[in-house]
Length: 425
Ligand code: ARG
Ligand code: ZN
Image (tube, rainbow, N blue to C red; front, side, top):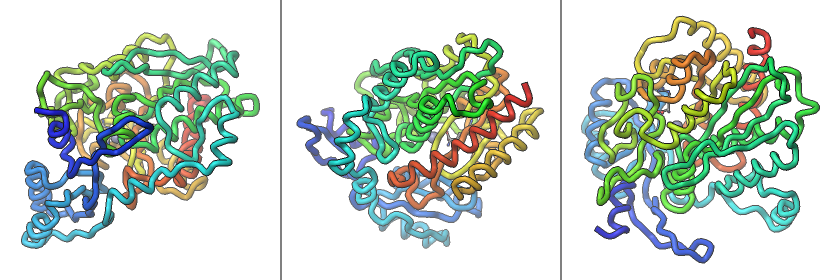
């Protein structure tokens, strides 16, 4: 099989078109004519119909809020799916008419003046655009060089394709500090996540002196891009890629493991797949992926005293606590619920965005092998998955104008957590 036809299969793509990008020819998946629909799912019957459509590869799920499920409908399936949903009496509305148009408009270049100013700062990062990995890593290195007394960067391993997995630490060096681990970009297409985590990094590193004692007296560890291979692929290949880029065996058409199904607590249970073509493929065993292995080894061996683990995803505006593997909660769930609610209040009053708080299996769906469950099972008390904005208008393709308000709101949530940690420990 040649490369192009492989890609059509693996990304469930519509049409492939050649695009020139910085002198190199890249093959980008084209979503022209693809739509996103909101499908009502309050009847059990509609879920059955939707999973059949998904197996037949006519739709792929995006997000859900319990009663309504967002699905991507491929152009050549629109007629077919319309017919089936009408016949089954399942209500739906079109929320994204032309997905490719939205992708094209999501991340416009900066105007010339702004771009020029940016070049003189020692790094190219800002929160007006979504950036390539190179800019994010360049920014992290710049902070370590500029603030060596409080900031350090290290690579905790390499991705499947050999990219560094860079962790940035911010600390005042006090030996009594508790530690917090924050990651982003487990899922490649959720661009708002690395953007948000780097916003936190920027805020704490650039303003450490004037930060509150709650922030200063915690050792912060940030891994803004857990899945660098997937992230880069969303920039040059398929904007809607979710998994890492592992090729399961040579000659196999489908690639990628869902890193958030690959962690080693209750691995292989509900909400996972053993099919490498699935978007929720769990891998061959717990921690089969270099990215999840490096993350878990780092947390286990760093010697830091982690009391909280935050992992940023999109979308849906949820603050989720364990367990995710099934509809059960840990013994101290009331603490997680209470702190989650206070975080949500802070986010709301800072940014206006409203978050729902609850256990992830209950609020979303059971899904095992998630990083949050693993962290919680390790004894890290405040383990949350944060599903950032929006609630489906743009979904994964959130315009850049959202970055600042979304990240600012999230930061207010982190401050609440920091306060709690300082009070409690
Ligand atoms: N949207 C995330 C996912 O599907 C939610 C993860 C919640 N945590 C969990 N352990 N299921 O991966
Ligand atoms: Zn995600």
